[in-house]
Length: 217
Image (tube, rainbow, N blue to C red; front, top):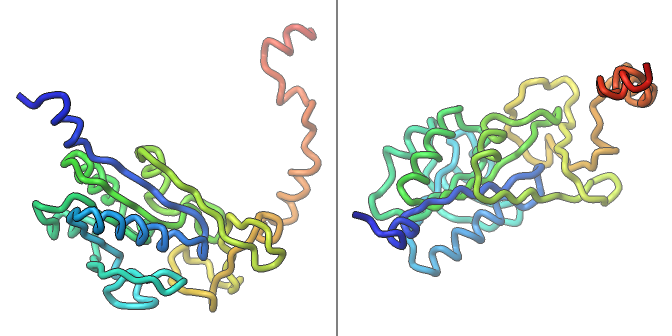
């Protein structure tokens, strides 16, 4: 029988570092990986094969920090390449993985592994990106970090795509395609949505609870 203390030691965790581009997500992932390595824990790092912007295999931050990783085309490959001795798994750019990455992360945590995930929480339209929403819900720890708006210097939580004609969600690029923006200098809302946001009557009956309407009847 596994004692309470032993069971606690075998418990895995899920950590998610998210935010817009140029916010330092990969840099934070590398920092946590290096601390685990200093503690002499066996670490494996994975990245989506599609992300070869800086290096085909290494995970590289915008500030040029780098750590050796294994590129994989499908999330199931992470389990296939996992060593029995591994205690920490780091996954960069996790938004690019298929939905099966959620099951993979759950399996890793159940094995007692510390899972560190880093990725974009929103795409360039401000919509949730891939498996990120589910990962945020199941995570034991979430760190949402901000970049700096390239227009005004304010904290930036959005990723702005420079090419207005490009509509596909996944388009790998760097400063040639993207900028970090604050909400004010990013807003993709069309004219009709803007008018609705500023003209919607906040005190209309549509916003009142049923009991409030009955009291006024």
